[in-house]
Image (tube, rainbow, N blue to C red; front, side):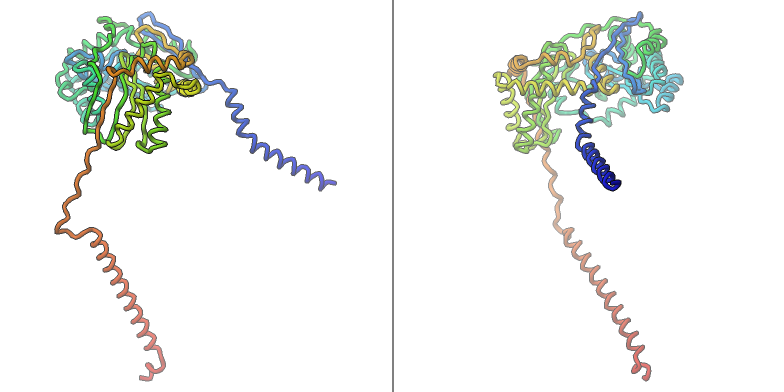
Length: 494
């Protein structure tokens, strides 16, 4: 009886174990489905000194992510100031000759934090990622940076040399720069974002100070804090640090749209190996069609990836990008391939765009593209660092004073008619861009006349080694034979 019970117990245990193996993944999925993803829920406020502050709490992360965004980048530079925005960024955020600022940077980095600053077409921004305990030192660092740069001649020359070394090591996208030059001529949007050596050499301390006083002030300043702290704790820390700052200078200018040269834009460049850029100019992030363009980009990429890579193998990585800025943007296919396949890939892009413009998209296709874009935003918002980066980008492209918006809600409203409208509106010839850079021809093989081929040298070396080995074996065999003869009775009798 006991043995029978034991058998029953073993059978039950085995069945439970099997059920765990089979149902475990589904149970995990059910638990994951019950968990509600974090959504963007930013609290926006304006301090008495005019500084705009965006905050969101992320419980359970023990991290703090701070971004200070200045709504001024290379696209806001004057005619004779290419590289001015990047130069001011260095003067404000990178100067470490001040002992107090240098000490704050060391304190943050000693605790595993990260500090840096960047300049784009639309904005300049500082990045600090740390644990929550370093939030106040991070805010003190930003407050000291904004109020501490004297723009002295000595410091300007130090940063000038640093910038020139940075430019010497940086590789710009020559093909995209050529496209921007044709689009915008001598306007700021056509220039390299970090400047060029000649322009950096000409920038004066007076220009730097004027740019700083014009742009580094409210309402063009946005502070973003994402972290494992309550809203009250974040607001109190901000008030104790940046809340004490005051600003003087002129109000930032209103941002107008650039004057674009009539299209289509065609570029042939041999400085980049085997690359095709093919697409069209789009409106900027303030346009009502902004979210529909994101969905259109996803739809085009899904189809073209299959047609160009999966089914025909024309390119390893044929991607469709939508790169909007505050004023305008580009939606384009970027693919590396043989020059002979450029036309085929461009035709595939145009054919798919025509299909969208003619209203042939199915509702299921639109829903798939829309869900992919929306869920990508949701996934990014699960990380405090990614959420802070998204908000920083958003702060750089929206109008001063505008509040951040969760992108999922407007994406829900994008439908087939919206994609048809934007494809018809923005795919006209006047907006088209086609840039091609054939692969640089391979260098000819060096002359080999009068030289022994490498394969012959290897063969001779191997043959010589084999001969040595054979000789050693023969010598060893002869020695063994002599020893044998010497040990035989006949040999001893002699």
